Amino acid sequence: MTLDQLRAVLLSYPEAVEEEPFGPDALVFKVGGKIFAITGDGSDESPARVSLKCEPGLALELRATFPGVQPGYHLNKRHWNTVTLDGSVPRDEVLDMIGHSYERVVAGLPKADRERLTGS
Image (cartoon, rainbow, N blue to C red; front, side, top):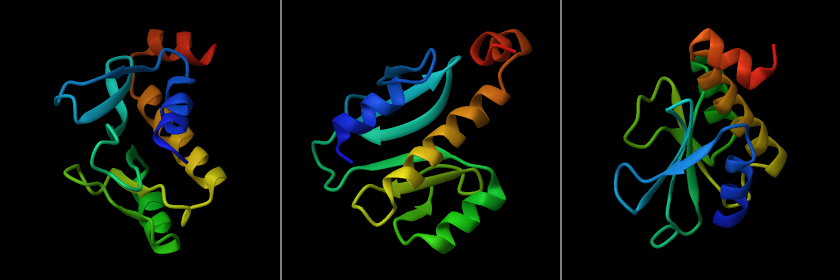
């Protein structure tokens, strides 16, 4: 998955926005003002990597299953994984991890925001 493909997927989620609060080298993707993904801008990363929020038990399972999944780089390692997009993690699995991260963040938003985003 290329950086452009990754960005397209991340921005396809309802109300997802891209910001650069840490400077132009880090692209941060948020929903409801909360981060659900962080990636580099592509200038010095090959292959691309993305950090995603994850339920702690699942985070450990994914790390044990895929060599391209590591504890979150400069993040709370209990709740974040960093995924190297070098093909060692199947695309469908990466997409599932992105969806899981987004859902974890939405679940922590205020009720009105959750209802607006999930339609329930």
